[in-house]
Each structure stands twice: as structure tokens, then as C-alpha cells.
View 1 (cartoon, rainbow, N blue to C red):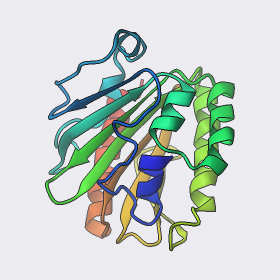
View 2 (cartoon, rainbow, N blue to C red):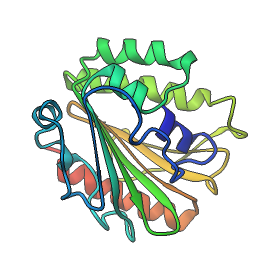
View 3 (cartoon, rainbow, N blue to C red):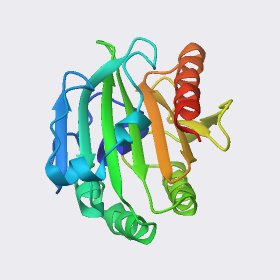
View 4 (cartoon, rainbow, N blue to C red):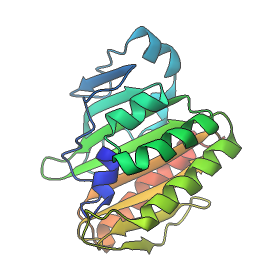
Length: 212
């Protein structure tokens, strides 16, 4: 997926996020803070309450919200995230099969590094679990444009969560998990044992906040 696929393709969670603000339908982009929301009517209806499923300012220590992108159709999400053509068809098929409802991509920054908090809502918990498996297979398959292999790291406190980098943790780190009808990714540019611990703490806090 363009933005976060770029971030996990050797630059895991690069601050560039080419998908943000790009084409696609039913989208909204906000900047400055999580309170600066100006969604379209369609997006507002579809995203009611979903912003609570994202990291908030400083929940990932030192990071604040820089920009938010909302998509309410499979085509809008795949287009907005600039999914490579050879992956777009299978991803759209998965999103349609699993009853995609809405996706929100939140950019985070601490001034010198970028991060992301992403959530996708599906038809059911089973559908979200299916999406989790789909995306994990894609991450493990890698991207020909990235000069590195998938590497996992341990995540604690979140059932079935997976932590990983592409091409080594120095490029960036990511944690993915699913809970209820939602699929989550949190990540940041650059990696180390200390940053993994901070990212794990942020993901764990998010999980306990949204889990019911």
C-alpha cells in the first residue's frame, strides 16, 4: 500500500507518506492536530467514532498528529495509498470480500522522524482476521523495490500482534494487530530496542483503549 507499504519497504514508516492527500474517492485530509477535522458528509457518516481507534498525540512518546486521510471505499483506499498495480487487484478483492467499511491513515511526527497510525474497519471480526492474514503475507513477501527482508520482533500485551521491519530495524518498525472488526498498524521511522519498546507500549495502550 503506497504510504504504509512504502514505510514498511525498507523505510518502514517513512515520513513522506506518498498516499496522503492523493486521489481516490470519499477522502478527507486534515492537518495540524486530531481536532482539526473537516470530513465530507459521506466520510463523516462512515467514520463516526473511528478516530478513537488511532493513536493520539504523544501516545507514541514524543509524536503528535500531523495529517489524517480518510477513505470510505476499497478503490479510494487502494488508490489513495498508491498500491502498486501488481497488488491492487488482489487487495481490492480482499477488501470487497471482507466487507471494507472505512480506513483512516494518520501521519505522526516528532519533528525529526515520521510515524503512522492506521485503522481499517471490516464487516466482522472474522473479516478483520482475514485481512490481517492477507496483509501479513504481503509484508512477508516483501517489495522488489526494497533492499531488505522481512524481520519480525516480539510484541507483548496484544494477542496475536506481530512486530516487524523490512531490511532491518534501523529503517523503521511496525506493529500490526486486529481486534473486533478492526485492523491496526502503528509504526515509526528508525528503529532500535528502545524504540521498539516505546512502539510496543503505544500499541499496547491503543489496544487496551479500544478493546471491549
